[in-house]
Every structure is written in structure tokens, then in C-alpha cells.
Image 1 (cartoon, rainbow, N blue to C red):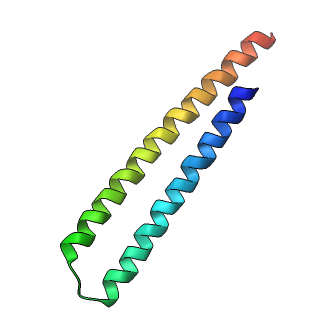
Image 2 (image 1 turned 180 degrees about the horizontal axis):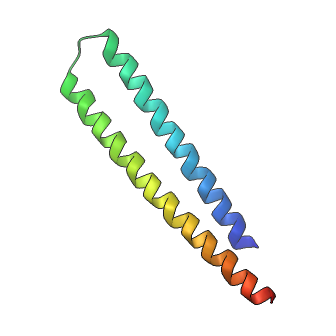
Image 3 (image 1 turned 90 degrees about the vertical axis):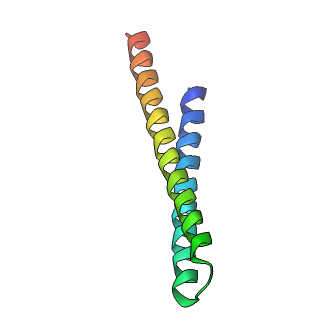
Length: 79
């Protein structure tokens, strides 16, 4: 049961990080739309945030797959 709690909190952390990445992305878009600043700097940040969001999605998929395997394993042991 402890493993499921750890997985649950891991998934929650990944979701919160994804939301944070999205918020930063929206914030950066608002900053660049009003001012003429170094566009290349913001493009690099946006690329990095997109890559980070992709990686977080990959990690979330792995955590969910592990969770499903653990549930399947626990069901087998319960029988």
C-alpha cells in the first residue's frame, strides 16, 4: 500500500510540474507580446520549456504504467 501512495504523490508532483511549465509558458508569451526584447532568448526558453513538458509527460506515462503493473501484481497476490 505504501508503494501506491508514493506513486500517487509522484503523479501529483508531475501534474503540478506540468502546470508550472504551462504557467511559465503563458507568462513568457505575455512578456514577449508587449515588448520588443531579445526574441531569440525567449525562443530558447520556450524550446526548453517544451522539451521539459515532453519529458514530464514521458515520466508520467512511465509512472502510470508502473502503477498498472503493481495493481495487476496485487490482484494476483490477493487471489
